[in-house]
Amino acid sequence: MATIAVVGTGYVGLAAGACLAELGHRVSCSDVDGDKVRLLRAGKVDIIEPGLGELVRSGLANGRLRFLTTPTVTDADFVFLCVPTPMAADGGADLSAVTSVMRQIGDQLPPGCVVVNKSTVPVGTATMLSESLNGRVPVVSNPEFLREGSAVHDFLHPDRIVVGSDDLTAARRVAELYAALPAPVLVTSTASAELIKYAANSFLAVKLSYANAIAELCERLGADVADVVKGVGQDHRIGESFLRAGPGWGGSCLPKDTSALLRTASAAGQHFSLLEAAIATNVRQHSRVVAKIRGALGGELRGARICLLGLAFKAGTNDMRDSPALAVAATLAAEGAELTGYDPVVTADVPGLRVVDDPYEAVKDAGVIVLLTEWPEFRGLEWTAIRALAAGDVVVDARNHLDPTVVTAAGMRWWGIGCSRGVDTRDT
Ligand SMILES: NC(=O)c1ccc[n+]([C@@H]2O[C@H](COP(=O)([O-])OP(=O)(O)OC[C@H]3O[C@@H](n4cnc5c(N)ncnc54)[C@H](O)[C@@H]3O)[C@@H](O)[C@H]2O)c1
Ligand SMILES: O=c1ccn([C@@H]2O[C@H](COP(=O)(O)OP(=O)(O)O[C@H]3O[C@H](CO)[C@@H](O)[C@H](O)[C@H]3O)[C@@H](O)[C@H]2O)c(=O)[nH]1
Image (cartoon, rainbow, N blue to C red; front, side, top):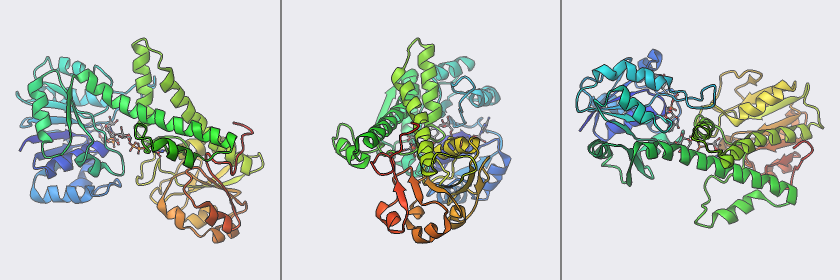
C-alpha cells in the first residue's frame, strides 16, 4: 500500500484518487477550490460520473481517502498532478497550473518520492519539471485516457497503462500501483508517453472528422452514413467506434489537445496538415448544422425562434466545455435568432440562450427544433404534442438519434446528418 497525494480533484484527479483508494492505497486529494473540498468531505460529488460518489463515500468511511485545500506531500510516496492544462491564447497548452503546483510543493517533496504527471502536457514537460527539481525526485509521465461519463469504469478497466520515465526504478514503482488492474503496461520514455496522449486524442478527432466528411458526401450522393460507417467499421482493422456522425466533436479534451499538438508540430518544424484539416472539418461541421437550420427556416435566422435540445458536449455528462451545441448556438445568436434550450442535466444559463427545465416549454413556438446531444430521454418525447406546440415542422437531428418514422408519424419532418432526407447544401 502506497501513500499518494493527488493534486486537483476534477474528472481525472477525483476518479484517480477514489479508484487508487479503492485499490488499497492511502490517498489525500487536494484542490484550490475550497467549496469543492467541503462538498467532497461531506461525500458529495458535483459532476455526473457513475459510481464516483459511492467510491468517494466508501474511501471516506474506510479512512483511505481524505480531502484537503493544500497538498500535503511530506509523507507521500507518489504525488499525482491532475490539474487543468487548458488551451492558451496561442493554441498551445497552458501549463500555469502545473508549474504553480510544482513551485508550491517542490521544496517539500521527500527523498524517494515520485512525481507522477497525469495532466495532458506537451512533450518535454516531464523533463522541464525534473530540471526544476534539480533531479532530486523522478518525474514520471502517466497519461490518463478515461472518458467523461464513464471515468470510474475507464480508470479501473484501461486498455493500457502508459508509464513514461527516464528512470526504470521509478517506472516500475508507478506500474506497481496499478498491479491489481488487468491491463498491459507500456513503459516508454517521458517524451513518448507525453506524445501518446496527444496522438491518441488527435487520432480520435481525425477519425470523427473523417466520418463527418463522409456524412457530407453521403448527403451529396444520396447514400446513408449509418450504413456506410457500419460497412466500413466492420472491417476489424478500422473498427466501428468513433464513427458516429454528429454536429462535430467537442468536450474538454479533443479540441484543446488537437490544437496543442498542431502547435507542438509547428514548433518542431512540421506542418501537420492532416490534423489541421480535421480541425477545419470540425468547424465546417458546426456550419453545416447551422446551414440545415437556416434551410428549415426558409433562409432567415434573424428573429427566428429556435429550440435546442441538448447542450452538453455528449450524453452522460453535464460538462459543456467546447460543446458543439454552444458553437452552433453562438452562430445562431450572432445572426439574431432567439434561442431556447433544454438539457436534462444542464440548468445554468448560457449567453444568448434561455435555458428552461422542460422540453415541451422549450419547443413552444419554435420555428425549428434542433437536437444536439444524444440524451436517451429525447427518444421518448411525445412528437404529436410537440407538433402542436411548435410553429415549424422540421426537426434537425444533428446526432441521428431519433427514430425518423416516429417523428414523421407525428406530422413533422426529420432532417438528419449524412442521409438524403433533409439535405440543404445551399450555404455549405
Ligand atoms: N476530463 C477528462 O476526461 C480528461 C481525461 C484525461 C486527461 N485529462 C487531462 O487531465 C487534466 C485535468 O483535467 P480535468 O478534466 O480533471 O480537469 P477539471 O477542470 O475537471 O479539474 C481540475 C481541478 O484542478 C483544480 N486546480 C486548478 N488549479 C489547481 C492548483 N494550482 N492546485 C490544486 N488544484 C487545482 C481545479 O479547481 C479543478 O477542481 C488536464 O490536463 C486534462 O487534459 C482530462
Ligand atoms: O462516434 C462518436 C464518438 C464521439 N463523438 C463526439 O466526440 C466528442 C468526444 O467524445 P469522447 O471522446 O467520448 O469524450 P471525452 O470524455 O472528452 O474523452 C476524450 O478525451 C479524454 C480527455 O483527454 C480522453 O481521455 C478520452 O480517451 C477521449 O475519448 C464528443 O463531442 C462526442 O459527442 C462523436 O461525435 N461521434
